[in-house]
Image 1: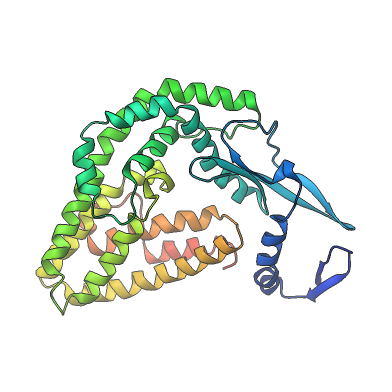
Image 2: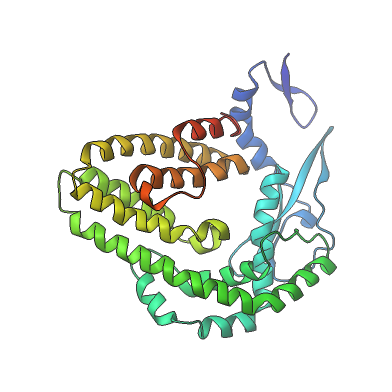
Length: 332
């Protein structure tokens, strides 16, 4: 079966039997075109409150003789959100969850400012987080509290009434959210600090340089700017164990686990490189794949099983299970 891509006049641009190649070739163009819709109803910046009426799941856009479907999304812009169209519903919903959390943070600005200012052990957290590059503790803490106040399985609001209900719920839950975050963050940053100290003790060893490089890459990935905002709460709770696994790995290296460690490093590096290539491609296409997102955390658990099995994993994990997950990833 041939598949054709039509231009705005309905004329074929590309005709091919290779659908996967077609997606790669035309996906970026489609993602770019859908953002060029100049209707201000679907292309706005500087939104600080719910003033867009109903946020529909999808809308039909007509270009010339062709009608295509766009998915309205609220995109977090730091101090506001933007309304735009996405090419897929999954991507639109992933972006909108961040956007709604930003609007909630804006709506609770005064309450959140007070909670962050008097957050337990804030000075100690600031000191522990100081080595992190380009990390805004107060800003990320504010958003983490806002997102946590919304709860675990909240539904994306589609109307102003729905949003106001979500905001009221978040205001009511803020105290509980502060408690949850205040319990977890010291564990996260202390474990990260201890991992960095342990790494510093061996970084001068030439025979373990491959491991030092790998661990540094892992720590940078886990604590990249925005990690408190972007990491789903269930996975953020596993961060202390991920950092503890670094210490355990370094202890094993000192005990002579070098050959096995080097072999495991090659395996995890292969998997992570493949993941990064797919994640980058999806980001360029402005798409979201929940299977790839879950794979990212499977790989972190796989690291624990390879280098610190004694600490245990969140679920059964193996190379075979990872290969099976790859089969569920879009475009693989």
